[in-house]
Amino acid sequence: MKNWAENVSWTPSEIVYPTEEDAIQQLVLRAANSCKKIRVMGTGHSFTALCHTNDILVSLDKYQGIISVDKERCQASVKAGTKLNLLGDLLFKEGMAMENLGDIDVQSIAGTISTGTHGTGKAFGTISTQVIALKFVNGKGEIVECSASKKPELFKAAQVSLGALGIITSITLQCVPSHKLFLQNRKEPLDAVLSNLDSYNEQNRNFEFYWLPYTETAWTKTTNIVEQDEPDKINFFNYWSEYVIENYSFKLLCEIARLFPSQNERVSKIAAASIGNVEKVYHSHKIYATKRLVKFTEMEYNIPAEAYQDAFSEMRKKIDTKQFNIHFPIENRWVKGDDILMSPAYGRDSAYIACHVYNKKNNQPYFEALEQIFRAYGGRPHWGKMNTLSSKDLADLYPQFATFAKHRQEQDPEKVFVTPYLEKLLGV
Ligand SMILES: Cc1cc2nc3c(=O)[nH]c(=O)nc-3n(C[C@H](O)[C@H](O)[C@H](O)COP(=O)(O)OP(=O)(O)OC[C@H]3O[C@@H](n4cnc5c(N)ncnc54)[C@H](O)[C@@H]3O)c2cc1C
Image 1 (cartoon, rainbow, N blue to C red):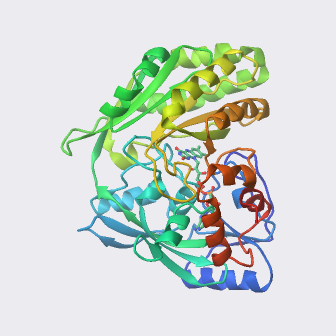
Image 2 (image 1 turned 30 degrees about the horizontal axis):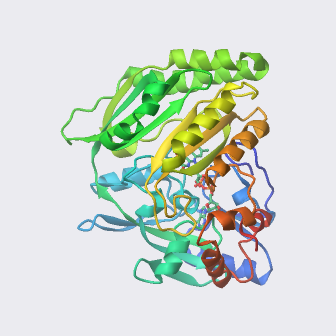
C-alpha cells in the first residue's frame, strides 16, 4: 500500500472491505481476540503513517452513501466511507450542501474529519465542526453513539480522533441549503494582499492566497454566494487554467526544477507569470475542489490568527535566503476556532500555512526550517501532514490532550488501533 504522496508505504497482512456495520464490528472483535492491530484507510491522502499497519487494513470503499436525511433540519447521516465528491452529489439531489470544503474532494468523510481537515473562511471551523453526531465501533467491539447531547465529551474527542478511538461507521452532518458560489482567482502584489488581509477576510465568504516563492506575486482565491438563478460560468479557460497550467505545465516546471535545482527561482517566476485571473460560477460542491495531478509532500501548521503576519514574514525572510531546493507555492488559509479536543483550531481563530515540495525532491531541510518558525508562534501541525512532533510536544500544544488520552484508553484499552506512529503521537 502507498499513500497518495507515495512517501509512506506498507504491507498489511490483510485488507478488508466490509459492506455492513455488523461486519466492521465482527472484524474488530476478531482483531482484538487475536491481538492484531487495525488501521482504517480513507483514501490515503494523509502524508504521514496514520494508515500504516502490518496487520489488518480496513477500507470503507464499499461502505458509502446516505443513510438518512432530515430535510427540515438540513441534516444528513452518511456512511463513513463516503467520498466527498459522491457526498456532494448525493446532498445536492436533496437540495443540501456542506457549508465549507477544502481544496480537493476525493477524501472519505471519515478520513477528512479524523485529521481536522479544513477549508478557508474566517466564519467557518474545520470540517469536523459540521459533524453533529457520530457512531463508531470501539476497540472492545462495542457500537458507540455520541453527539452534543449524548456523551458530549466523548463526542468532542471523536470529532477529530486520528482513528484512535475506533472505526467510525456513520456521521451526521449539519448541512446548509444548496447554493451557488462565485469564485475569483486573481494575481495580485503580495504586499498589497498582506496589507489588506483583514478586509479580504471580512468581505469574502472564503478567502485564501498562494505566495509564489522568490516573487512578489500572490494568487488570491475568493468565493461568495450568488443567487441560485445566476447563470453558470464555467468555460474552456477554466479548464485550461486548472488542468493545463496548474497541472500539466506545472509538472513540467517541477521536473525542470528537479533536474536543475539552480532553476528553482526561475521556475517560480515562470509559474507566477503564467497564472491569470479566473472566474467561475457554479454549485458549491463543484467549486471548492481543484485537480491535484502533480504529487507533492506537505507540511501545514495552524498558527494563532493574530500571529500570522509575523510568522509569514519570518518564513518569507527564510525562503528569500534561497537555501532550499523548492519552488512550490505556499498556501495561506483562515479558520474559525472550535472546541474539539484534538482540533488544531482548538480555542483559537487560526491561520494555516501550508508548504509543499515536489514529491521527487527532498523536503527535509525546508520543512525543518519552517517547522521551527511555526513552532515558535505556537503552531500546531495538521494531523494529516508532515511534522516531527512527539507526544510530549503535542501535550504542551493541546490543553485537552490528557482528556483525549482518557477517552482513547476507555474506548480502546487493548490498543487495537494503536500502531507505532500513533504511539509516537499519543504517547500510549
Ligand atoms: C492533494 C491533497 C490535498 C489536500 N487538501 C487539503 C485541504 O484542502 N485541507 C486540509 O485540511 N487537508 C487537505 N489534505 C489532507 C487530507 O484532507 C487529510 O489528510 C485527510 O485525512 C485525508 O482523508 P482520507 O480519506 O484520505 O483519509 P486517510 O488519509 O486515509 O486517513 C486519515 C486518518 O483517518 C482515519 N480514518 C479514516 N477512515 C476512518 C474511519 N472510518 N474511522 C476512523 N478513522 C478513520 C485513518 O485511520 C487515519 O488516521 C490534502 C491532502 C492531499 C494529498
